[in-house]
Structures are given as C-alpha cells and as structure tokens.
Image (cartoon, rainbow, N blue to C red; front, side, top):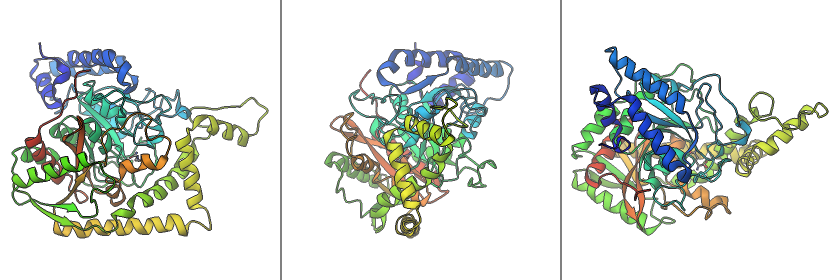
Length: 491
Ligand code: GLN
C-alpha cells in the first residue's frame, strides 16, 4: 500500500480528486506519522486532531456532492504558530501568549481553508520569530530530521522539520530576515519568501511590519508554487498588500521543470565571496551554478556593494519595529497576566508580566530597538539604517537591469549542533547573511536544496525583482530537475 505521507501535495490532491483516496485517509496517515515521530522532532506546538479530521470530512463530502474542489483539496498543511487560527492556540513560541485562542483566522489560514487544505496544527518557532535555530522557542527546540542533535533552522524550524519528517507535505512560514529560506536550506526542503505585500499580513503576529512576509514551504518546487498561488494575492485587510494577482508561479514552476533556461541571465553576487561561509556550502553552490549554465542560463557576476551593510541595518530596523509592535503585550489585553493581586499598580503588573512572559532574545531586541529609536540616537542608528536600506534597494534595482535574477547560497553553514551558537547572539545572526538583503528590498526569494555537505543539506537561493516571483520558481524548478529532491535518512 502506498505510504500517503511520502506523496507530494500535487499527487495527494490528484488522488483525492479522482476518489482514489479520501481526505480523511490522507489526514489520518499524517496524524499517525506525527504521533509516531513528533516526540523526537517536536515540530508541532499544537496538533488539531479534531479540527483536521472535520476539515477532511468536509472535503470528502463536497467531493461526493460533485462540487469543484480546488487544486489542493484534501492536502494536509502545518501552520507556523505566528498566524492566528480561530479557536486554536496561537503562542508565537512565547509564554506571553500561552493559552491564547484567537477570535479570528488570519487571511492565510482563511485562504488555506478555502483551497480545501486540511490544517494539521501549529508549528514550533523561535519566540516572536526572532532567531535562526528554533532554540529560542519558549516550548523547547525542534530537532532536524537529518540529525536529531542539530537545529532545523529558524525561526520557522517547526514548519521545515514537519516537511522533512514527513509529518506534512506542505507548511506555512513567515520570513522577516530569512525564517522561511534558512530552515528550508538546512532541512533539504523548499521555502519561498514572496514579494513583500504579495501575501497578507492580516492575522500574522507582527515582529517587524515592514519586513514580515508569510510564505509557502514544501518538499518540492511545484508544491511550493501551488501553495503560494493558493495563499497569495491582494487582501484589503492588510494596508501594505499589493493590489495585484499572484504572478503565475505554478506555470513558471512547470516551465522550469522542463530543464531549459535558455535566455535566462543569472547574477552571482560578487560581494558574497564565500568569506564566513563553509567550504562545503560554497562547493555545492558552485556546482549548482555550473549545472544551471548547462541548462542554458547565462551566468555573470554582479556587484552589489551595499549588501555587506545589510546585516547591521536589519539588526537596527527589525528591533526598532519590534520594540513598537511588542508594546501591546502588556498583560491587559492578550494572554499572560502576572502579579495582578489587587494591590499592585498597572505599571507593576505590566512589568512583572513582561519579565515573566518574554525570553532573553526578545528582551534584547526590545531594548536595542528602544535605544535605536530614542531621541538623540534616532538619526545615528535608525535613520542611518533606513538610508542603508535605500542603498541596498538601489543595488537590487541596478542588478535587475542587467540580470533576471540573483543567485547565492541560502545560508553560510549547514545545520549546526543544538546549543553551539546560543552563547553569542552574533553567531546566530550570521545565519541570515545572504537572506537579509532581499527582505530590506522587498523582493521575492526562494531556497531550493542543491546538494549535501558532510551529509547535510545545502540550500541555493534565487532572488528576483518585486512581483516577479514566477522567475525564481522557473529557475528553482530547473535546478531541481537536475539535482533532484533530498530525503533525510529514515527516522
Ligand atoms: N533570523 C532572523 C532574526 O532573528 C530572521 C528572523 C525571521 O525571518 N523571522 O531576526
């Protein structure tokens, strides 16, 4: 009998549509898989068994009634715990929201339901999406299915690990500085950050609002495109949503799968020399560049001189926005409240709640951000960082006058051992060296597995101009057609 957890999302949808399997059978197979492995992986913070089976039954009923099912009907999906789910716990990996059941669904979750997907549950993440390893989750780390002693990336490590452990064929992440792409890279899965504004932030618990972008994660490029298509597009409830349709990412993924890149011009970023990156990562990257050239792509070098300032600029802009966004967690409206015994002042209760509710990395960011925005320092820190952001955007604009897309490794290093980078925050921040420039610019980027280094997956990044998300899918699918997909050793 086919193991339903090993199928692609497209295959599952095809079988369900043809009546060869039911959505309930598919869902039960994944729930069983979660029950078998998640104690070791810890990809999930909450499994919504009842909700998933009810959603699956409804898909089966609609099929029986002859209704037209969407292209992902009956496909299970895991959702990063940063997105609100009506009546289903949403913690953002933080103690401060422990026990909170949102009264509404985020737009992404609403669209997932409209597409007929079945939400299995909520995945683990670094607290408030701040981190690169999922070790900063208040609920304990997620483990990488390739090696349970290593990190699955972050902040969306749960969403990536759930794919690699065959607990779900699709998942949703959010990318502020790399949190979809870097976990994808280190787990051998595909993760795409859409154009900022191309996917709705409504119901996404805010970290850094000018950067936060929800997006698709999958085990192959076509599945990621199908999910992207289902969740993307204009949303009037998000003020920065782009009033345009999703580019034809599915068509582009199919086109790319033919393996022909004739006429496509790709730029290797000169400044990403490999300094600070592992040799094995750079070797896999260079081999993939050659593979793309063999498929007909023209490869050139493109200088982006301001990319080297992206990391420091991000670590001023993101904490500044976070210090403002997280002010709403005060023990009054949402989640945790500490010390409210009738004798304490409001200020004392707020302070005790925050002290107990936020972890050390979140506190660090709030303090850095508050400092960077304070009068007297605003111009020197936040103001300067915004100027750097403009220069980085200009680098991208100039580059895209010469090439169709830029390419780089996704992350400088493969999955590192749990505990090896937590002592020094800077070592953790370096994981996003190659992913952050795109967030500051706002364009789309995808990470696709391209090889192994010491038996661990390496990710290849493709960055495209804003609203040209289809381009990156074409190149990613072409690369996948030559290097294949990557399966972790059995759990
Ligand atoms: N690792 C980066 C950070 O810690 C990016 C996080 C993200 O994309 N959410 O801020």
